[in-house]
Length: 577
Image 1: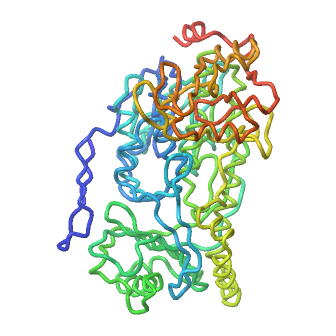
Image 2 (image 1 turned 90 degrees about the vertical axis):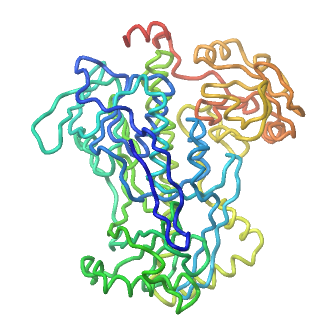
Image 3 (image 1 turned 120 degrees about the vertical axis):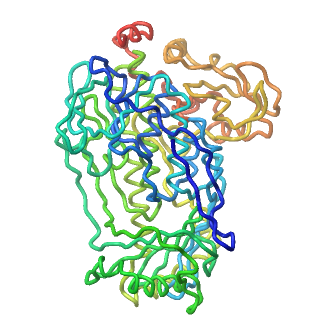
């Protein structure tokens, strides 16, 4: 049972939300049945692990969760997610509860050492249906994600206060060794598949013998997190402070919280900086830079400091994300610097990519090598997002004052060129989660939607208006534009998609009034989407709402991995029992 309460200040500017007391965890077991073979063992219950658990619960997988900590970490770590992640939260039925406490569409600015704006990123609502950048209070986010698992926990077993320290692959399952921290008490559990969601120092990854390759930034950063007591000077926007001497971040956060972060000089001692009479003058000076008012830095009447800590940025990647029956997710597989706010989002995308694939393998409708598409599909986007984060960091971290002056001039000039201004301000430079290899048709070019998200837009259904992801539901969908899609597919393709459990649906344009197996496209947005891609008539959409392919690509739409050696659903289910 967890309750979140914020203490209102005298002037009423602190957070006023008092969350209802809700059970956020599945009741924890002292020791699970060692003779049982779970469908899935999830090691780690942070954002990636709890998102995976939501998918597992939704799909009815018998799942064991192993988490060292017994409660939600009470402080912020990650602070932002994008439209793609909100779409994932929609797919597990939690987006409305999560959005209720978010700062959606928060403007991000880059300012000089004197607080003058040189670049602005203004998020818009995308075809994913949400703003491109959104800020959250991580304990509240994790609370809602855990509550989502708890509400449908029939197939979930929780083991908190235990840690996994070893894993061994076998032919039919994997064994995970678990112990009570600080004791010699241990036992083993078995899962047909294991997800290592246990962070950058992942014991699961280390047990498999894989190191993280990559580099670390040379400097430490200092983070001050506090409760807002009254309004701080300056704009309410998120700010990158591009100061050659002390670059950093000024971040207004949900939950009545505020964060300041800055790069430390190598000569600075972190312990010394945390002393009250040292910290507050530094904080006052730093916050004044963000406010565009030299004498407007904050003091103890603005913020109650609750936590300070230091950290180092890393750029690291595991060479293999799947080893036999074990998959690595989130920071266990890849770590990027925080400038794009994409580290947590990447782990959540991993969860949305892999769990439904495990379900298909366990159901016997695809061959086990189907799971190799996980890394093939996710690795490129993670690499692109890492480079994007490094690019934003390179704007902030210019140390030479002359180069900083040139940077400021160049960015101001860019804002005067209409095309470039629109490109940067609307965040079009952020890499899209396109799939170029994996479980998609072979087409991948300039004029194909293959491997990109299907639009999540307003459509009509037999029960009323809703976003298209909700109308399509969770599964494969073969869509025909004003037609039965079977009319445009060969018999072999129809049989293969039926074997994967696909539903064949008709899109009716120009109407909200539709019947069973149909969705309405009232204003023609889906019509324009099909027309854009070679006047396609058929689109195949995956359970994660990525486009498998369209018929106008003139390639085979017969899915791979559905071979004769893939067991039928009934046979596989019996085997699992």
